[in-house]
Image 1 (cartoon, rainbow, N blue to C red):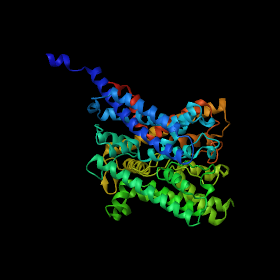
Image 2 (cartoon, one colour):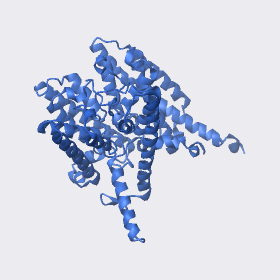
Image 3 (tube, one colour):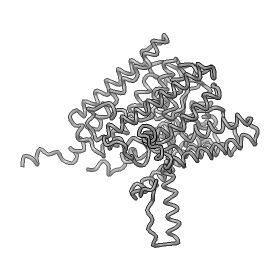
Image 4 (tube, rainbow, N blue to C red):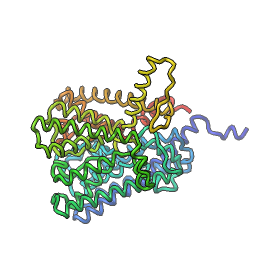
Length: 510
């Protein structure tokens, strides 16, 4: 009798679980706040003020500790359902934390909370869309903070937490699967913590390799514009496929050697990191050679590059060598959702612009740092459509969907198809809101520009078309459009499902 009285009811259990989820998110924010120490040290080195970063650290640590106290002793109640809330809230808190240094700096470009939140959300979600109009006017420390937010968000804040925080007592698998991009997590380690550690170890190693390569390019004289500061800055935005650059003209400010180096690492960043681990660390290169997603991913990059190169040649926009370099760079940059620009493509003709917008919907591989729909989902959808065509002729046909010779569970197939439909629906709604708002409040935009802006924010790509082109800014949009694009970036990074689950009535019922 006493047990029945003390046992919490449905609402009580829900409250305990939600408090535990909020507590975990607060703990993550508390640890994340330490990252602002890095730009504070850079500020001291350059003789700049470290107080915006130290202030942000203090505020975020205090808020995180307060939230952690709410869930104190209740973290063990966080399960699969609550994992969605942890992931969604953590990324909102991360963006809010990222905005604090901008607001505390007093920079006129980022003195409005919504603008600062847009820039921070763009950073942590590795989108690369910027509201700044004078990027090179930022202090070195603040410029590096922009780059660092992308690097931290690239492999995932929660994946990092699972790797380094052994005392994080939550359902690790649920959180990992809620945050990692792609329709499923194909384990390459038995323990979730080991998986997270290996993902981050590979991520750090590739970033370090790119830093060394860029430094070598600068020191060898192949590109004198590539200073040590820019080597670190661009490595921090290439591996997470982010696209922020301390240069106003993005990669146009650098030479061909830098562009080819970044092209190679953008391609690597868009490959499944579990596949890279097997092929390199475990020395199983045949796994990569036989991987169907990797083949389609590379084929899409080649086809996109070929189209752009052909148009640049035919329309005499660039010479043969420059056409190959710019066409390849822009196709890879947009498809991998990095968003760097080696040239202002806003003025290109319709075909190359449509090609770039189409590439925004391709994305990279699952378990990569790239955004958008992902190649594996396109592959599964294509095989579902092929099966349905065959069934229209052979009604009794039983044909499972296979990938790399393995039968894919029908639930995974349905989830992939459902995600694509949900993604397209979100894109349509977002485009409608932005089209209506720009028609009423400006800036004046062509339909393709509206579609590009929506696709680039939802897909975490970065640049749109005029006025938000690769050398432009998102500053001219109204608060309604800015808020809409901020939400789209958040939705795109979380791959929609965690947020839409939270919006369902059934989630809040036990």
